[in-house]
Amino acid sequence: MSAEDTVATSATASPADPAEEAAGSAANAITRRGFLRVAGLTGGGLVAVSVAACAPAAVPAWSFGAPATPGAATTPPAASSATPAASAAATPAASAAATPAASASASASPAPNMPAGWTLHDISARNVVRRYLGNLVPALKGIYGDVAFAKLAEILGAADNYPELALKPAFVQVPQLVLNDALTPLKPEVVGGVKVFRLTIDEMDWPIDELKPTVKALGYNKQWPGPTIRVTEGDKVRAIFTNNLTETTSVHFHGQEFKDFFQDGVPFVTQLPIIPGEAYTYEFTPSRPGSLMYHSHHNAAVQQGNGLLGPFIVDPKTPTADDKFDREYTWISDDVLGGFTINGHGFPATVPVLAAQGETVRIRFQNQGTMIHPWHLHGNRMKVVARDGFPLGSAAFYCDTLSVSPGERYDVNVVAETPGVWAFHCHILPHAEGADGMFGMVSTLMTVPKASDVDAIIAALVA
Image 1 (cartoon, rainbow, N blue to C red):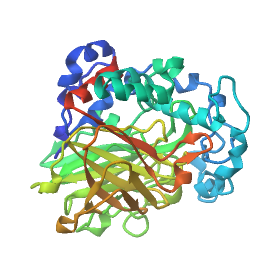
Image 2: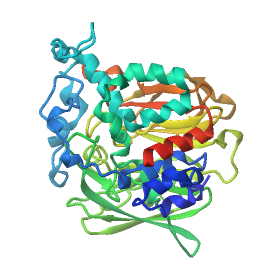
Image 3: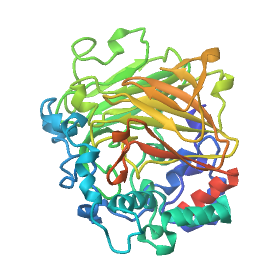
Image 4: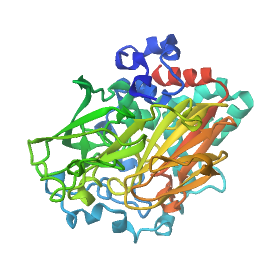
């Protein structure tokens, strides 16, 4: 698969006319392999909700422990002066003393109109899911049918006509890796047969979700994770990075086996650091296909932890049977900046993995954090077909929970067999659920009966 598999219309879709998309062009704008990039049509460009306009004081704290001052638990030191010691407070270890039990008292007091037997935990937990689904809920009736929809409506309390029913889902209201790849894919110039990619290295403010205050972050092309650098096996690659930071940095292509070790991106081992204002060029021919990564390898605990990371995908020139899939999703986990995140966001602002019944979805797990994360998929099994970019072939195996260590990448194929909204989360539970409900490393696999239902969901999102 190549970058050209993205939908042709996504680059030219006008965010000023979502109604026209809803009326029918959304269906034509979809390729089954590219939904989550195509879903960029539902991205921040179509959403008029401002993070700054929200009221963070009313939002449950991001940490899984006791409620904290908004922003305090998630804001790292300023990127320009960050040091490993100074950033310790931004790491999960800093909140180790905060346990779910510590905030149990938050569920002790009843609230008006609370269902019998419920606590504030139940109210908060339901509200997070309401934010996740937003105004997508009414569209689910025509997709899952009256009986299933009635159950979902009861679970969510839709009869309350709660405010989130009129808002876009949380994951639509923030920038997303897969959405950015759809709207503004990183397309190379071709110079003398070489694919030339140009990226900047920037300081920025980044929203973990649609309600919380932004955090000080670093990013490639002002996004976290950085844009996908995608090539095909055998391509000659030139990647030019311009350092807009106030400190030195470098870039390492993780998993790449270089013939010229001076391309490896480790300051004072293979190169001098890239000084502020300087551009540095890496040039190589990928040694093999697979799911690889790129990230800072200089002051890396701070720089990579604060967002200098991204996916590097090398598609095979000759795909195997396991390389054939209908849709794909890149899943980068991190656990330093902003708590526990998937693709730079925490639940409910995490994009669902969406598929039609019978389709195969490729999920590319990449752990660019500091902790092991065992990913558990409810109701479905994952076929693990590659590790660190190396195909497993006859050694491929099935599981429903897959532990991914820092630096590791796993490619899995999921055949979406049963319609439903299936939880998909890290099974280190304090990374995924607390006294205020689910947060952090949680997403879902949304399996719908027909491919046309995917179109309907997109139409509902852009309407």
